[in-house]
Length: 313
Ligand code: ASP
View 1 (cartoon, rainbow, N blue to C red):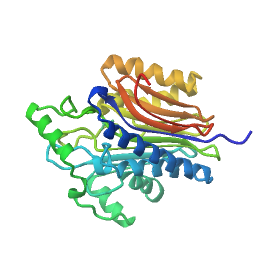
View 2 (spheres, rainbow, N blue to C red; view 1 turned 180 degrees about the vertical axis):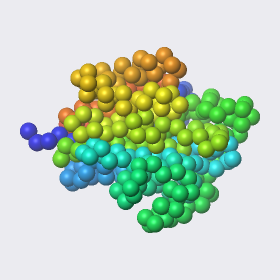
View 3 (cartoon, protein in one colour; view 1 turned 90 degrees about the vertical axis):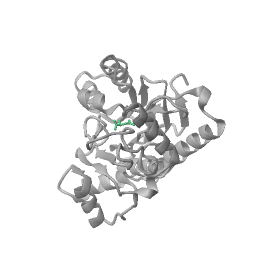
View 4 (tube, helix red, strand yellow; view 1 turned 30 degrees about the vertical axis):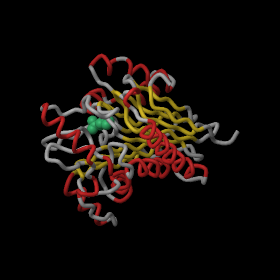
């Protein structure tokens, strides 16, 4: 049998309220998820690398105003965007990440540049942007990222002195909205990518799990690739992505058991709402969430496209 290949993506987990989701918003979300997963899958069918497949998929989600990454990033207390992203390639355990960047259109591509063209794993803020410009990234004005929807969310959070997303007029306001992708390519490489604007009304240079290798992103050839979404403070403390990989490596758990054990177990007990996507070395995909929904899609190793929103689907 030829080497299996497959890809899965997410557009964030959290409270997604069915009754408040309009048909047109739902259609836009499903269409964008489908375009993104198909773009990544195409890289794989053309014998491309798993890393390029996940970056391609995440880039499409970053370019959409519908997800909390790139263009659709949530706003900080100071009414600007500060984005985080990371990538990992499972062959040599290479990784790259950026945190707190404000003027980069596609942070996931910058994370890949950090991995490939710097001697480091994680670059932050102005330094990360200075590096970006040496790699051909253009300076992107904050105006590009501004959306009315995010501004209204910020004002609502500020008036309540909250910093996480909470209920209001949007059907997914308690959704964390980060995007991510995991893939297995025909060469047997596993890769993963995660990108986010973080949480609404964040202050003081707050950084979540998304750019932290082992918390938000992990890839190990022969084992698993993982990308997470949820309240980053919990995912960092539980090192969720690494924990999935460790359970599979040391306890020989399958990908489904390892993911469910963590997401429905200690993470949930601690109060860590969210989810993750994972793919193992055979191309088996698992979506896990302890929230009412997670925007997600995959093209599995049989070539079947699946796109879903709610946890009971
Ligand atoms: N994990 C992200 C963070 O805490 C948020 C998200 O998943 O939307 O920054």
